[in-house]
Length: 148
Image (cartoon, rainbow, N blue to C red; front, side, top):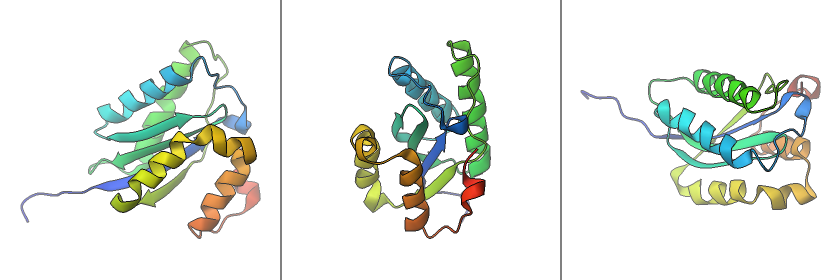
């Protein structure tokens, strides 16, 4: 095969440092637009994004020539600098992140889930939501290393 082709969908989740609720509703749309542009510039198509006060959900495609860790690192570094330049002087993302694969057939379900974040978090904390993802994807974890 003379060319390399791929289509890998990922659901990326990461939080602010210490899960501080510092992403205000006023800055949320601009942050989402900025992260979307960052990812597009890295050749990643963004299907859905939602920035909660203390965490972000992104459904996007993994570029063929980039690792997950490179994509996340570039996104978090640049968006953190953007937040600082837009009034959040002490803004930081957590060190870690969660990435969960999804199939083409489940895209609409994941998009809907991300779109309905305010409804989910009226009933469930981010911490409990993240634990459910880890259990659903059968990811073994030690609670003391998940949070920072």
